[in-house]
Image 1 (cartoon, rainbow, N blue to C red):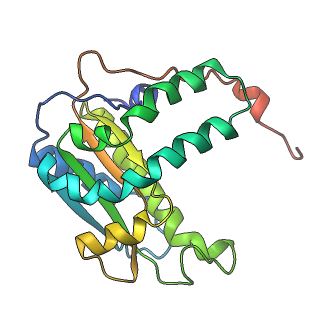
Image 2: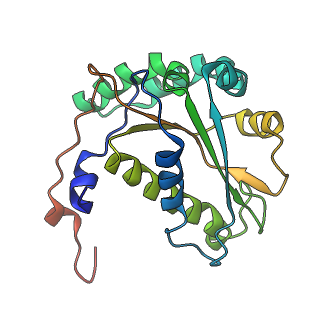
Length: 208
C-alpha cells in the first residue's frame, strides 16, 4: 500500500473478526517499529505479545475498576458539542475492554526509560524515550493498515501500568506506552469519521 493511502485508510477499529493474524505479518508490523526515529539510536524496544482471549483476560483485568470513572470523566470533560467526536465516544466507551480481547492478539510495546521517572520528568527532553516509543507505535499503526489490519490502543490510567507490568514480569527500568490490539476488522466494524482539516489554516509562517 502506498504511504499516503495508508495514512488515509488508518482508522481506530474496535470490532474484529475471528480471523487470526499470522506470525509472519505480526513480525513485519513489529519490525516497522524499529525503523522509526529514536533519540539514542539504540532502539531499546521490547514487545510482550499475548495470543488467546483466555491469556489476555488476566492482563486487562486491572482496567475493570477504572472504566466507570473513565466514562464519567470523558462525558464531563467534553464541551465541544462535536457530533463526530461524540459518535466516536458513543461507540468506544462500551467496548473498552472487549476491544482488547476480541481479536485475540494483544501487544504491549515496552521501551527502556533511562532518565528521570517517566511521570516525573525534569525537563521536556526527559521524555525523549517516551516520544521515540510513540514514533515506533505510529510506524506499527501504518504497517498494520498496509497489511489490511485494524488497530486500537488503550493508554493506561491510574495504577493500571504498574499492575500490568507486574503481571507480565517487566523489568523496573522499562515502561509500556499502551495496550495495543490489532486484527482483521469485522464486516460491520464502526469506522470513525475523520475530521476534515483545512491545512492552510493550521500553517503559520514565521510567527503564529
